[in-house]
Image (cartoon, rainbow, N blue to C red; front, side, top):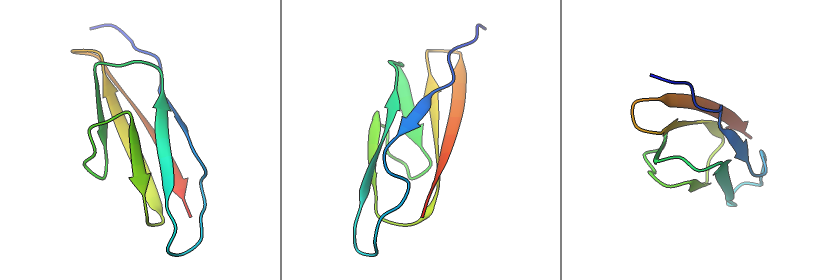
Length: 69
């Protein structure tokens, strides 16, 4: 197994009640899996939480997380 680059999550980390925010991963990977079950490069979040994304390029994986308030 090799090493892949640590993913970087972009998007606002706070929003008002009733709002939402889009979080996105920079870089191109073969697969994405967010802690809220979304399997895309981006996910729309509607609640304060810590969101984690696991990216993979086959056998190699890397993880990043961000806290949204």
